[in-house]
Length: 224
Image (cartoon, rainbow, N blue to C red; front, side):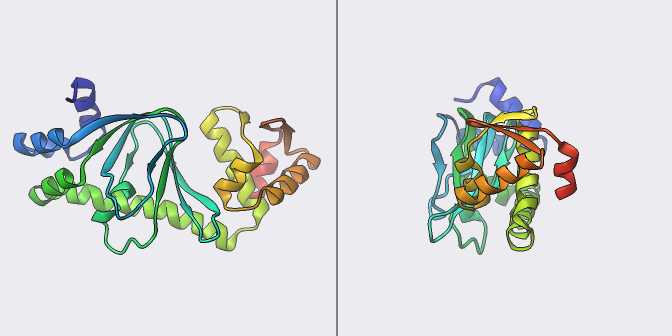
């Protein structure tokens, strides 16, 4: 059973909500469940299993893919009030890869079942328009990652990643391991360690056990 806060989340984060009639809203409400996942939980990992549309109420999700050799690479992250559509990939034509979703913090979300969402989408074109816009936005994020992997040097990719991590943490100092960076960038831990050591020698960052401090933001930006 959804409460008033859940309905407010729909109103504030689903642009089509106020354009739905009472019947359409009822379908979505009846097809929505609130979930809370512990840190580290795999929320979705198989494109053949439609998890549904996810609205993040609180917490943080990491969306990533895994190569045939077992390497992970992060596509993007979702935060409070973000909506995830790739978890409902069965609604999207020509998706031929498995997207994995993991809770990086304890995360509470509203999950709209695929059946309910598709049913309302057939009744209201505003839902379909929102879905298309969301898919386009997420694929732009994916293509940005592909562009980095294919065309950018590793020092540039690492500099971009460290600046993004600092923005997420809201501080120049943040906890992170070399393994986590390697996982995000689809690289080997040894490669990350060597480049971070070089960054430290160039006085761009300061390394500590389990953490990094950005010392020269301007220098990092120059690399990007």
